[in-house]
Length: 511
Image 1 (cartoon, rainbow, N blue to C red):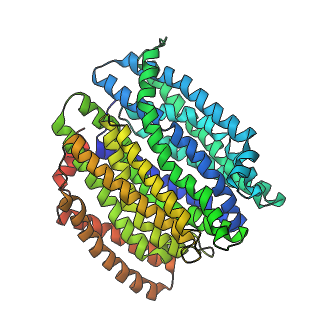
Image 2: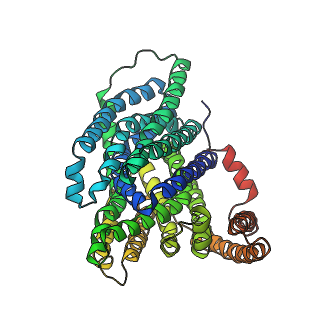
Image 3: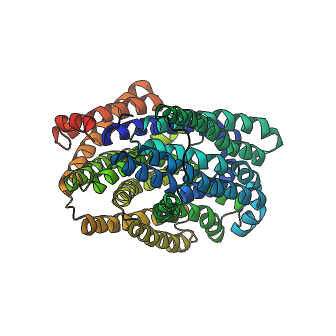
């Protein structure tokens, strides 16, 4: 199987990620229209529990991709399939166990976390997903380890299509019984989507296995030990990161009540933060995660083969790519928050200011993701975990202090998130500098893209106003001005020589 370069693999996953997010909007649009901000609030309360499982299991596919990449580097093909066999045992235990806990202990969990009791149906609906997702992650790790991102990309799109079709369909079916039942039906869409995506990946895996003429796969407890050695610290790091979202689901509704809001008002504000603003913020983060997913197996291979120059080159290109994505997205969502919110959530666009200020967290989240991937790819698993833990503590403290005050209320959660990721990104950069002995050129990585983004944003605002005056349509003006902004930004990136055209061509060809 042909390997893909860092840029090519990132582009494939990035395009799939963006397509997946836009498909997700087709899930959000009818859902918001059907059950409103209150119903979305019930749905969003259960969702962080699901994401907590994803985070808890996330170390396994990363470990799989890293180990398989290393085994391929030394041409140990049978060893790659042994990795899949051992990881399947581990993920069966984790996935099935999580499903059983969420299903049978849904009510005690809701009572302990002081959620609205109507969130019960959403938690039940999403409880089946971990059992299926656990197997999906194994096969994604397998193909990522082979440095072929195409199967993972296709499976993500298929998974999201299934989630939209079944989630929205069940939401409509259960709506006559109440918005809480409708939210539960929507939550079950995650399971349906996982089944479709997983079926596709398994068929591709079977084909690869047949091509390599692998029949009997030996058990190898040593590989399972190796998977756990790598997966546990990575999962801890990702779990700590997802705890930041879980903190919002636990603390924000409670602290809003302390600030004087009613239960319904608290649920609505929480929905505007997590069900609207965060959903839009996650679109650029999808591209960043594509870079990180492609980065880990490539850096791992170069690191184990002691290609230090290639490791430094990958660090440089990945940091540039992260910055080039993060900075224009921050400018765009900050200055066009109202236009974007009205475009994506017409007639239900409350939460504009939440989106505006939450957009300031984008660069720091993306830097955190990228530097964590670099450290993990070079075998430094514990240090980014400790950095994330520090950020998590800061978020908890600030959330408790700020959200409970009437002056800050929901914006206290935004301030807490931004502050936490600023600290983590700084700590990760310092750790990377001293651990890998790399010297980052901040002028090339940050300043040049900022120049390009500032010029682009000015021209976008001018073009938006001109187009809006002539069309009186926010949607048309917004879409055309954003498209023009993308073209202008790409030209400016080339003119300012953040990336050379020849460099991009070479990166597509080389690993």
